[in-house]
View (tube, rainbow, N blue to C red):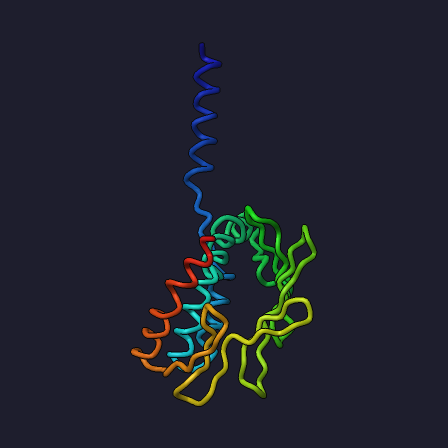
Length: 183
């Protein structure tokens, strides 16, 4: 009987030690993306990039990766894997490597070997998505008050960098892009 009580007490102690420890970490991957976004341009450009990354689920993926993987590794090992030059993200759709070379980012799916690039052309002031050797621009800084943004149908529209301009772009782009993601 005493052996059962000791076993139950040890099991309860082990359970409490695993559930009461905090794996809260620095959310380094999400914070890196957010800090980069803050440096892209004016507050209106930053809002457009923020919105685009929300629609493309960049922030959702980085938050989940931080929550489920990176923060736990940081807590238990003391080392944050985000400090490496190539980041690895595992999720239900696969394992992805994200490499930064100072000019942009290369995202590669480990299972298929498929990859794409996010590049910023400083001369053209344009962000582009690169796939299979082809580049598809999605945002160009025109002047301090305007950017050219891609629409869900592939056309471009000029967006005024003001609260009204950003809200108008979001209203015209969001419903169509969210419907396209659900297909």
